[in-house]
Image (cartoon, rainbow, N blue to C red; front, side, top):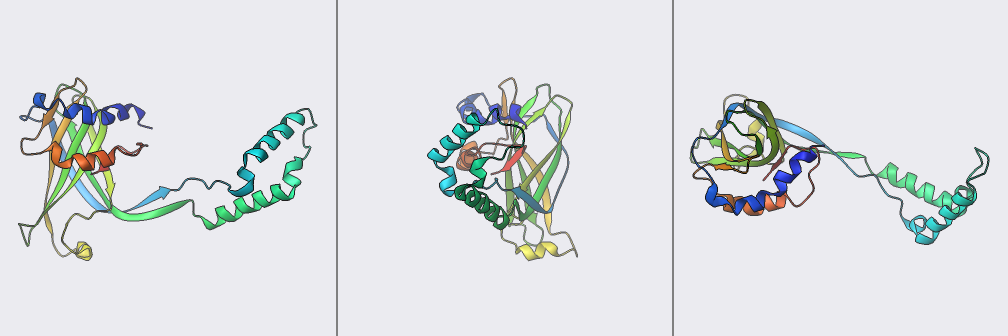
Length: 233
């Protein structure tokens, strides 16, 4: 768990109030490489919980009472609750639910990756970056995928950023065309939009606006972060 990354992420909206201190020149982040690919993400589903009468407060109290009463019974003595009609029904119901519900599901999408290096003197904690695509056949068609990452990149260190998204690279290009291997479809570019450092300082690209993406940022922060490093905006 990257628990130590959560506090900088949760402080994003507070940091925005300090926008007057944001620097706009000389980003310390160097982009070393980038790539994207089709990807199938496995998403674990929470365990099914037994429902019905077995979850009632009275039954839980009854089981606790029986457990305490039988604490001195010999090892291997069967639990009388398991032999009741209610106990057998609850066990059967749980088995049926588990057999009908898959433990995980697969979602088709895209994996976006960029390898960066911290060329500055301060540790990076929060990073906003963008994977930009310009269609070669139609240069006015430019699509961008924006990402927010909670990181811990010390000076001189490198890090591989990786984030899953259901959005394809080309916003208005038919997704089926992405299977065309006959030639390059896009001119690709990685943009570092905003960097927040451990010492409280902030760097931001001059023509990038936090306010424009604020609703997407708030949505990304609505649910608790698990093991993921980055989220799509």
